Image 1 (tube, rainbow, N blue to C red):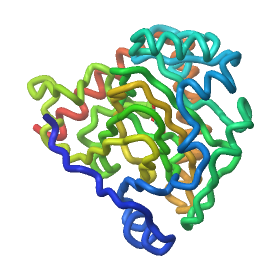
Image 2 (cartoon, rainbow, N blue to C red):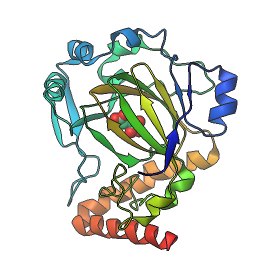
Image 3 (cartoon, rainbow, N blue to C red):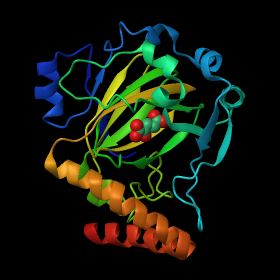
Length: 286
Ligand SMILES: O=C(O)CCC(=O)C(=O)O
């Protein structure tokens, strides 16, 4: 198993405690009681969301790499939320709801939570929802916008494995993407093929209903749903000039360039980047 220790857990934090001990140190933490007074803590479940938004058509993503000319953010399929949740209940374990804008799509749900007064300026236009079935996995990645993220979890347990940006050199980062190579298994690492994984030292958070995980900017994260669950991410965009610059570069240049290369070069572009992810990372540890 990749070296990892548990993310610190607290009941709740004052603004000063959060800023001094976590935000400024860029250290993850799980807050167990932050959602205590939110109606969402009582109400949010697969059944409830089905009732409120079951008729909505939603894009769904799987855990396979996008091949050939397909854009890396193209959904694998689209269906009504109700049918998707029914599939999860019947054992579907690959398709996931990813980055679904609650405010734009199901504004009624916004009444069920509030933005914590914790020293971050949350971007209130972008509370986003994620969902997955038992066994679903989210590819190891970091968020393109270098935001501070509060991942608020509801439903069955899920695990989040985190690595700080300083460990990017060991992550088999695919050039021009924001993820690690698809074939790297962070649950059962193949140290022969991917020796840099031995150098990783991560943190693991187990999220239960009502928990909130703070993910600092640029942190790599890999997620396994142990049971059917839902999470909402609240984000605060970067203020540090370094992070702001990286966000703009990723949004404006990297993403656009990658999309164009896929469109015009196709699988040769993907293969080149996969090869480079392995050779560059392995060279660093030789
Ligand atoms: O919880 C999930 O399914 C994905 C969350 C995530 O990857 C993110 O907030 O960046």
